[in-house]
Image (cartoon, rainbow, N blue to C red; front, side, top):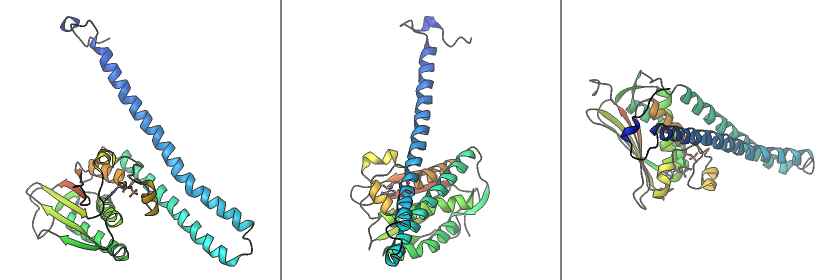
Length: 264
Ligand code: ADP
């Protein structure tokens, strides 16, 4: 086998390859544990709405068979549970598609100003429903980059949606696109209760939530930020998360500008 170490260089007499092997094993074990946790979490997330659906179906076949009023109410609940499962499966599929193509950097010409404006148009009804005012700031001209438009739409959509969901009703959400000579930034700032610092490092893990009940109630799948992180990685970009104590949260997606294309 390969000689990894000149034993004479070491003073404890232990060959270094043992350390390397242990290190790799820890890494593999962690990856394996994350995979097992992921499957367990995903199954659990699907089982919860499924159990509710089965319960309501049985009730409708049995005790509530002839109760017209209950039937309408139960069907509404069943529809929302089925919608939740559908969102979850969509998110799982998207996450796995992005992961499969992680090494392929998307190269279509895109404009982050156009992308952000189009996301804000589609989220206007949600903002109105939650009584949130979106305050925008855009650069003059474009923010040209290379990427996958649908995926970058998903990034901005997730961040703004979270700002609306976790921000405070009646308050604003600031959405800013800013460019410098090298990079474009989409900055989403809300004025909700923010994120306690101990949660920040784990926020982009699959199914990680600060408050599961709160996320569920708001229709979350717990996969949004994991998807955002993977998309940004595929674009060789970055996601920054800050939460100044008691002043809401700031999410910033950073992506390299397409050289020499800045301006109108
Ligand atoms: P979810 O579907 O639960 O919203 P995400 O992956 O989008 O999943 O976010 C993960 C968790 O991060 C959320 O459940 C929430 O606890 C926290 N979070 C995300 N965005 C914000 C925000 N703007 N303010 C406070 N907490 C947030």
